[in-house]
Length: 355
Image 1: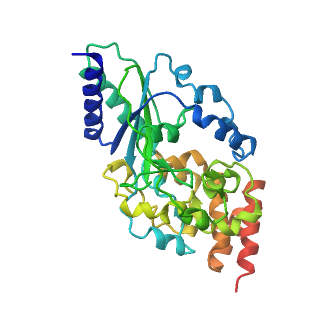
Image 2: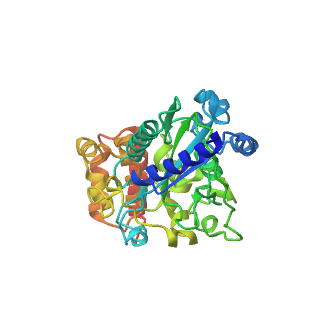
């Protein structure tokens, strides 16, 4: 049997194993990322990355996967759905007293879950294929890897105008992960883009962070401001942030293709600690120790208590007028850092100006 036919059978087996482990789609691509170099550099030159200086580093590794993992010949991209069983997502955004947490962060930290699954898949591949000296390395949002570009090349979906990956049959509520491997597997076909003339994600963005189709200014993005940004959140974005205390899903919630999205079957992505129902006031009253207890094993833990409190303070400033809210804000002023004090004082003023 020739090598091409053998690799075709191996690729088919890898996809079957991936589905058995709980992934929803497996695709395979080559390493050529030349098409993404100029757009990426233009994005960096526009300073759209904000404080995320790590995105400027290691660009040589990003566009040359073989330099990141020598001997790599193919990249296996994996998709896994994460949308939780929560029918009240849109209502939560409209409830000014409820804290809104991005749907991806309601369960266990996806980094740990996907990395573990990718390692299991890699080991199964190695056990199944004994005739080749297989070498691999797994990633999920954890290294200079152009995940969306690779997933797009491998047929998992197309990059939407909001810059996230979209799949025609499954929407966009999913995580990605990769296995760099030294097998000359057959590659999958890239899908065509089906965004068409739709501009729903651009129109709905609360801070107008999608400055053009397929171009996101992270400095304006609520997900960036509430998760990646470490300092004071600019005043001009605070009202637009509303009750979003960790991330933002507006561009996905409005996307027509997400009517085809599926609720996750992955237990680790199920809602923990009723985070889909937590109020802003309750979120603000969480102590530092309680914060670390509640968010142990969650992606939110990386945010840290101070930035969590900063974000919730903005939410409280946007909430309905309440003496309980004002009292809670004032009670935190004394022990708050200067950065947090700035946001608390803003929230107190916002509460005072409401009717």
